[in-house]
Length: 481
Image (tube, rainbow, N blue to C red; front, top):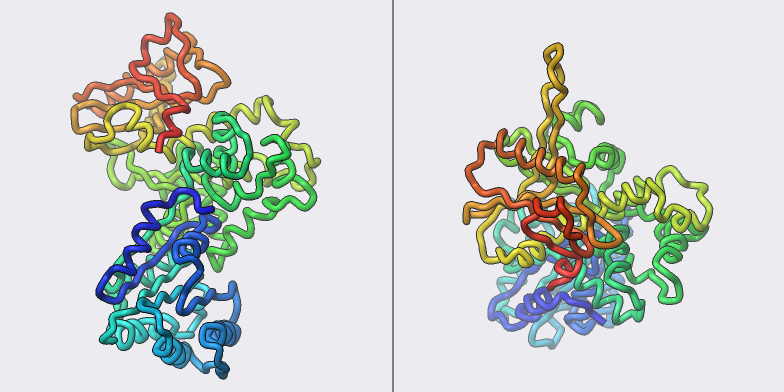
C-alpha cells in the first residue's frame, strides 16, 4: 500500500492527460520509495521499463537493456553495440505498442551513464528526434535515480539537447512524522507518537528503514536487531548508502564526518582546516551533491555575509551512525537497549530532536499561526573574540539553531528541547536563553520583536522561570500534515 504521496501521484497521473509528449524526472535520496511510487501509480503497466546496473560496465548495461527490450516485445534482439543503437531498438519496440499513451520508465539512470558511453547524447537523440517528433505525441518518459546530483547536472542543468526539455520534475522527500504514523498504523506497529518521534530520530523518514521494523518487538529491540545484531539489515547501511551514490566515497565521508563533530555546522573555511585544502570547485560540487541527496543543509546566518554560510549534517541515520554505530563494531546485540537513559543517549537525543524539528519547519509555522506569513529560516551563532584584555570578564558565545524571520516584524527564536514530560525551565536555562536573545539583538541590531518559542515533546511546566517563553509548540503539532 502506498502511504501519502498524493501530490506526487497526481502529477504522474496528469502526465497521461497531456496532449504533448511528456518527460518527467523523479529524484530523491536512496531508499525513499521513488521506484515504488512510479510502479504503484501506473499499476506496474509500462510500454517499456528498465533499471540500470550498479557499478557495471557498458557491456553489462547494454546486455540488460537488450533483455528489457525482449520482455517488452516478446521478440529476440541482439545486444546493441552502443546506446544510440539501443535507443533505436527501443523506438522500434514502442512503435509496435498499442497503448494510447506509451509510458517508458528508466530507473537508476545514472548507473547507465558509464564513462565514455555517450548515454546522455543517445537519450537526447531519442527524445528530440523521435519521441517528440511523433505525430501521435504519445510518449511519456519517466526517468528516476537516487543520485540527485547526477540528475541535477545531466538533466536539470543540461546545456545540450536536453536543455529545458523536462515537462515535470518531482522531488520525493522522506516521510514526515504524520506519514510515518500512517505507515505505522498500516503496518500494525502499535507505536505511540513518542515512539514514532524516537524512531524518526534514528531512521528519519526513509520508508525502507521503517519497513524493517517488526511489530513483535519494541522500538529498542528493533534498533538492536537492525543496527547491532549479527545480521542486522542496517549494520552496513552507512557504507552502502554513500557508496551507492558517489563513485569516490572517501571525500564525501570526510565531509560528513567533519560535520558530524560540530552540532552547529561549519563554514567552508572551517571544513578545509579539518579535511584539507581542495579546489574551490571540487568542494562546491561535493557539498552540492550532499545537499541534493538530503544529507546536509546549507543555511545562512542572519546578519552575516555569504562567506559565513554554514553547512550542517541533518540526516538522522548518519547522525545515529556516528553517535553509536561507527566505533562499536563489536558491540553486543543489545547495545542500544543498554544505552537508553545514559548520558550519551540523552546528549544524542537532544541533538536528534533538533534535527527532527528542522525537518518539520512547515509544521512549526502552522502551529504558530504564521503559515501564510512570508518568512525566512536562519540559524545564528556568535563567537567572542579569542583574545581578551587582562581582567576582562570572559564572554560567552551564543548559538541559535532555528530563527524564523517574519515579514510581520517578528522573529521567532526557537529553543528545541527533548523531554520525557513537560519541560522544566530552570533558572540556569532561563539565563541562557536571555543571554542568547540579548546577544542576538545586540549583534544583529534587529528592530523586530524577538519572541522566544519553545519546541518540545509535551509542553512547558508553569514555573517562575517559564514566563520567558511566549509560545510553545509540542510534538503533537509536528504530526500535522
